[in-house]
Length: 217
Length: 362
Image 1 (tube, each protein chain N blue to C red):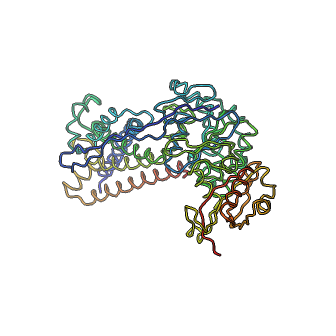
Image 2: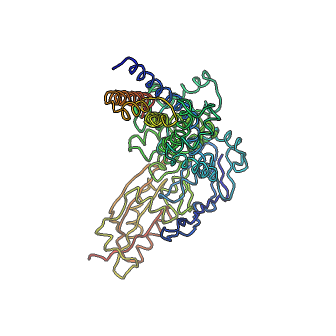
Image 3: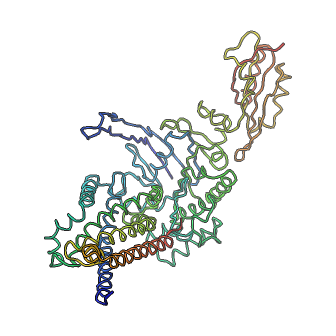
């Protein structure tokens, strides 16, 4: 294999990591609060706002139901507004993030759902404000579940990022499709797949380790 | 310290109807459920008041109305001279700092160790780390957890978890402690030690305790007064000694009999008839306390009324400082004499309940 090819593979690996890292961090920063909102605005919850809850739920479901490849094309104007271009790796990060936010939100909501309602009741009986309940009870108690959710998100982002090539983004998936599949170069295909496997394995192990560290149950 | 006046709580369950056009048209009608109706309850400063009832009777709703975890639909809730239902959200949180609460399932935070669990209410109040330490350590001492400060709830037994919960409830130095079935998830021995702890706290700190339970054992061992709740209404209230001697309602008697396991033998029950016949003996349940315990009433009965007494079951219980005697007996003699015997017993402050009549064997 030529050294040019090796450089391409290294560049593609860094691109994938870059896309997953940025979209992962941004979608966590926005998705976790959205997930908390989805949970606490439910009827009979600490900040019950049934109407807001329905609207948020609907928006989240719409975000979750659009196929990624369509979403990527559909939001091109928005992408251009945010990163100034509609092609390239940076342009791929925007739809990746948009797709991951509702995904994270639902996983966080699910993690919060696992907390026994008695804990919230106990905090209320202690005179905790809704803000204190979220910060001192809900988030710490759901930490393990949230980390699990973020791990799943990171792994999903790795596979979604393979579609980044559609908007001229780089990454291993793109490399695998263009060199491995289109030019029928099985070596490149195998190497990219192998790197993706290692990457997913790495994210999963890191996630599992963090969950173990945060869970005392 | 706690005064509920005319407290009612109604839940409106909205009927559900599927909005999907192709779903079957199953509808559930709207319903109103009255969980509490016109509850009056007064718990004086420093006393332990128990509310006992079967599941679904409204106990949980009642205790949650005191700190407004459930907002009553009507009525007044006074705690420590403050009308709870008038408070704003901020004032309510302040007031809740003065009301501790413990739960059947402990409700400890799994991600915090023992120390940090007890520290939580103090963190919520905005105390500094050093001040928190000063408050938490003596409480862990009081509840016997000094060697467990760094352990996590998952490493503790049920009784230890409830001790942590008690320490946590006491951290904000409340005037009132609410106990929601606090021992129902514990084995009898652990229940005993938790009850002893609650009594100690009541005596040492002068804490007013309101507890709900379905266990007579809890009422018997620590309560001063007891209320009986049924279908959202308080149907009976009495000093614990009186309640165990002579409950006034049928439900009260059922609770007591169930607790004492003092039932007439099965074979006898089958032969019991409600109305006295020409050749029947009454079977009675006698409950006596105070002076009556030490008076040889049975032998006097034989002498003064000419009635023989056949004792079928007997038991002596001590309830707080009072001794309580219970007996199921058959009174043997002609009808007019057995009637006189019952009058005689009642005139000596015994509680007499005629369970029925059995045919004479002879």
